[in-house]
Image 1 (spheres, rainbow, N blue to C red):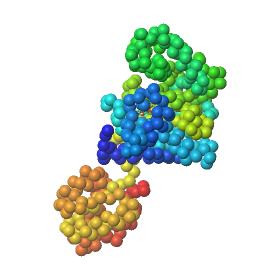
Image 2: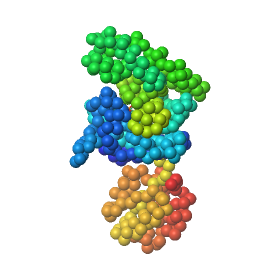
Image 3: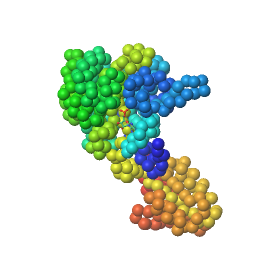
Amino acid sequence: MKDILPPESAVWQVVENKLRDVFNLFGYKEIRTPFLENLNLFERGIGEATDIVEKEMYIFNDSKGRQSALRPEMTASVARAFIENNLNQIQSVHRLFYVGPMFRHERPQAGRLRQFHQFGGECIGLNDPISDVDVIYLIYQLLAELGITDFTIRMNSLGSQDSKQKYSKTLREYLSSYKTKLCDLCQDRLDRNVFRVLDCKNDECQALTQSAPLILDVQSKDDQNYFNQIVHILEQMQIPFRIDPRMVRGLDYYTNTVFEISHPSLGAKDALGAGGRYNNLIQSLGGADTPAIGFAVGLERLLMILSQEKILKNSAGQDKLYLVSMGEESMKQNYFLLNELRKQKFLVEMDMSCKNIKYQMKQANKLKANWCLIRGEDELTSQQIVIKNMDSGDECKILFDQLFEFLNQSVKSEI
Ligand code: AMP
């Protein structure tokens, strides 16, 4: 678990703001749910035979013996909130987004944290190929807004629940004849969650699954047709993607479309994000029969591939001012001025410890101030103020009364 400190926290803010803008543009509204949920929600929602539920959750017993868990992902929580708040009675389609921390007790390693952050979107109430396309397009726009273009989206279709069941039988039959050659974990997965064998990183398991039957071939004509329409529209929109007929995704709730987003700098093992359709989740948690599709992207991984410096530079739209004082009375008067400047939304700082002018100018440089406003005892007496442009080094003295007129004309303020 990591502390996020300045100046990195400023990068987070910029990234989150950009993401919010794009979500808004696509009609997504923010949802915030509690970090703690009933354990049962994740067991039922994500599936008991998944890595997350089997070994990665932080679980607590409260004083009444109820088991709670820190959320390891958001889709189950969003589905729970959707049902509990009867959102389906307000309107038939909901587009919801979130940004926030998730918790998984994983083995710590590069790009894998125990508290990490995801942003994601859930489009609830639609079951049309265009809504799948729109989610994929949204991901493109979110990443493009941050200047990330060299990522890959791999897609597959798991088909409906019926098709999934049919495929798990076919796959189990196929793999059973090689059971002893599978790794110990996959031998166990064979009975409990056979799809996971296709995800296994073990070389021998991978070799064995190479000629396994494909899920796309086993699913119904309707399911195939649905997926083909998505593929066709994405092609028409010239959105690049790859079909990966072996991709299954670990969580139980997915049906039909599934996808993963990867980036060359993260390596083959770690995805940038993932998502898919989950047409049965809401009903299986006690809600009405409601189709949905969603995705999540890891923010730490996103930040690993972004040029943080570039983000900060591009977003530094507003000029910074630094107030320089000489003597106690000037510091007090400048403090009143500081608050006046703050009121008028100027980005301004000053030294509050009565240090010498050399120290204050050094601070101004350190803070990358664009302007210094210098007002010592002499300027107080003559009712003037010195303005120094820190970029050009030019300096001028003006009447204090004219300060705000000057600032409004010369200082870049974007708030
Ligand atoms: P998942 O819910 O497992 O499909 O994860 C979606 C995305 O969340 C991944 O592609 C990662 O970017 C991110 N993610 C998942 N687990 C972690 C973790 N332990 N540490 C950092 N990022 C993670």
